[in-house]
Image (cartoon, rainbow, N blue to C red):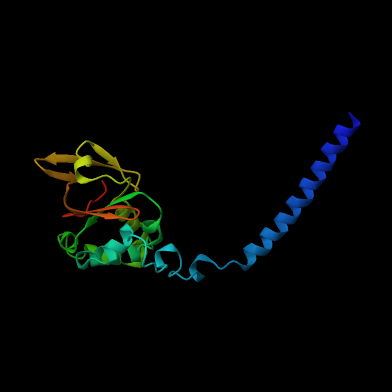
Length: 188
């Protein structure tokens, strides 16, 4: 019984000593860590150059002349690193024409720094976990988006519409699939 008590007290003392040491180390680390505003925004997985892996959903959009507005929006919302994670991700990527069809001034207004959160929310409304082909999507009625809202899936003949946007092409990616759509999918 005394041996068990000694072991317990010894373990308790060791735990207390290490937790105090950890707390001191954590305080030192916190004081030397740069604030979010000081962090270089060109760091992270999205900015690693890799010529051997299959392109991610982000890199497919960057390489497409028809998605320059989407890429500018992703950059303005600081979502590059989110779109290169392991996924799988389905990105419903509106074309430049889809953005141009929005009311005049909408895109310019959303790209302003003070609208970053709103822009990020709209962009997350175009992302779904998974990697489903256009044909497989025909089996769904709704999809849960990264914005925590749902969008409807409709089938009209051979065409598939997600949130009212027609899928006009699909490109497989290393971390999912990019479905090119003809409209911007706006949250409710």
